[in-house]
Image (cartoon, rainbow, N blue to C red):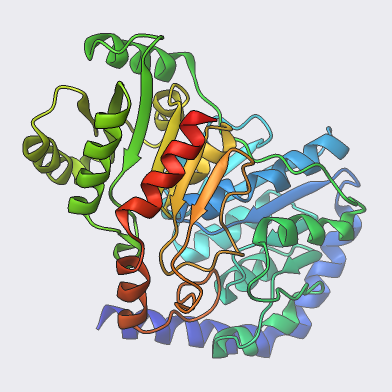
Length: 378
């Protein structure tokens, strides 16, 4: 019932916006005359997906690198704010949940932005920046698109088209050409604080992990269940690694993953297997930067490892191997056989559940272990 009510409100707002568009356009033109020439940019990445948010950081870096005096404000959800909270390229963070939709529009108007970039590509973002009276509105478009985008995309005056199955972070940088940024350096970034570094240092000390130890991080969970490889497979893989290498294996996760990680540790009954589920998203990079290798399904922390240039193994399962996977030269992508077509995409409707399960099932423990040996022996 709540979803139906929300959809109804969105449609009502869309049709009201279409009806009032000529008047809104007049207000935007009047606003444009009063705005500062200095770049004041509002960016809407995906609000909740940690991986997508980290893959937006090259945009922040590129803008500040070319226009150091510009101002960047980013809209984000409370769920994901920790991963960009300490990013020095960002001047201001607006938390989506802190406002009603109408008050958020008002807040955007107050800040007098002259450019907006919707990397999330949603119709909601179009409404926000239009009612926010932003004169230059850039929005990712695609095909096929939901009906709400079909009837609102025209309200943005720059509409770069995303071709499915291409590397999304490169596309995000390409759209910066509208503000005369051409071929920028690609730099994916996460940052730590002294407090989080101290917490990680105390954790390693408490667990008796020294600087000389080989430390391997493992994530058994994903925000999206259809990307999970299986706890038993990870346990068998960890046992194989432990047998071949003298190492400490740190199983990371959020507080919600604590029970699953503890269950795995109980089954393993090995003092070299260590759980780390009490680190927030903001603190996670401090924990991970000590890893010599990171193994994960295709989830947000794999992009943390990529940003920190940690050798990594990404078990992508049903995810498209071209769109958002790490490009780390020290990383390996473990994909299913070519006969298993991708069924999870950045902006396209996902495939059937059977296809996703088959993609994960077809990735064998030995496939991943060979990658581990290759990276560690390198």
